[in-house]
Length: 107
Image (cartoon, rainbow, N blue to C red; front, side, top):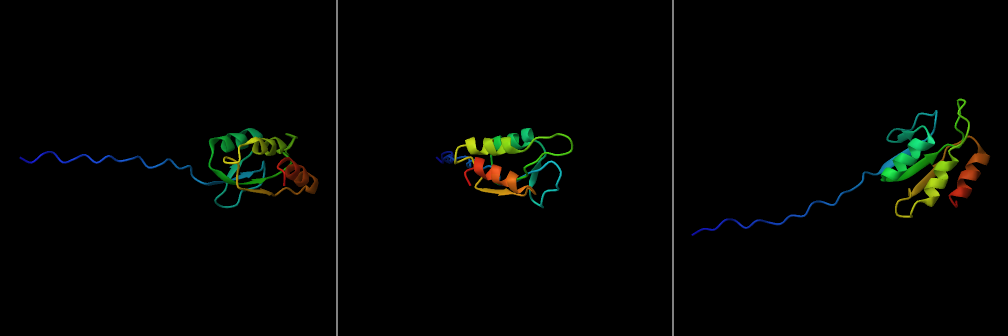
C-alpha cells in the first residue's frame, strides 16, 4: 500500500526591508532613486518605518515655514546603530547649517 507523500516543512523567507535613500528637503527635487521628505514629520516617519540606508539632509526649511531640519538630525542621532542610516550627506547651501547637522550626528 502506497502511503501519502510526506509533507515537507518549509520556512517562510525572512522579511527584508527594502533599502531606501531618503532626501530631506522642502524645495529641491531629489536625485533619481531617492524618496523625498518635505517636512520634519515626514522625514521622521520614513526613518521610523525602517530600511533607510542613506540620507541627505538640507538645513533650512524655507517658504515662510521657518525652522530647520535639525530635529531630523537629532532623531537620527538617537536611533540605535542598527537602525541608523549607514551614509549621511548634507546638501544644504549653509556651511554653518552643515556644521550644526554634523555636530549633532557626531561627524
